[in-house]
Structures are given as C-alpha cells and as structure tokens.
Length: 120
Image (cartoon, rainbow, N blue to C red; front, side, top):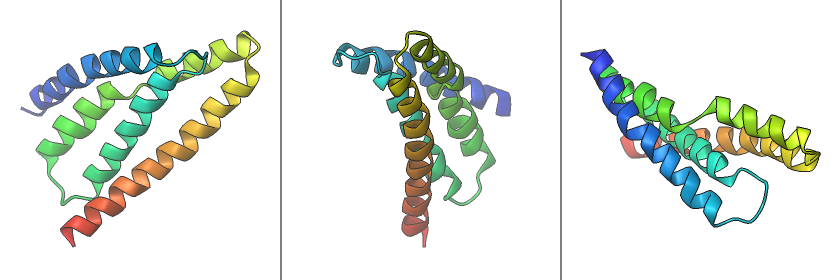
C-alpha cells in the first residue's frame, strides 16, 4: 500500500514540477533557473509543514516521499548550477546555490512553524 501512495504522489508531483518550471521560466528572460528554484522552495515549505503535523505514515508516503520527492529536484538544481558556472554566469551559479539553501531552509522552517501553530 505504501508503494502505491508514493507512486500516486509522484504521479502528481512530477508533471506539476515540469509544468510549473516551464510556466515560470517562460516569464523570465534570464539565465537564472527560476522555475527549478520555485518548485524546490515550494516543496521545502510543504515538507516542513508536513513534518510539523502529527505523524501519519500514509500521508508522509503520499505527500512527503511521493509528491515532494517528485516535485523537488536536486539533480536539475545541480545540472543548472553547473551549466551556469560553465557558461561563465558564476554570479548566478553562486546565487542559485546560496539562495536555494537559504530559501529552502527558511521555507521548511516556516512550513514547520505554521503546522505547529495550527496544531497547537
């Protein structure tokens, strides 16, 4: 049953990541990977929120592992950062790394705090 929940969450998260990335990137005329940045920060906030809720293994499998696992993308983040560095857009590469870490942790913390505030 858990595997099916993970697969179901991933079946929603992966296409949503692709569509969101394309929609955001189409609106920005820059080499900075705003689409990947946005889905990774959003996924961090959702996962932070989920961890602040009372433990539910089915919900964790569906949303945490399945949906957030497919929505967020470390491999694309790594590839795009490397591509920026290779194209001598080093400022953007460093901004992507630093911004992703700071914003991702901040989003996860905010999601966690929100869930704790709601369930308290």
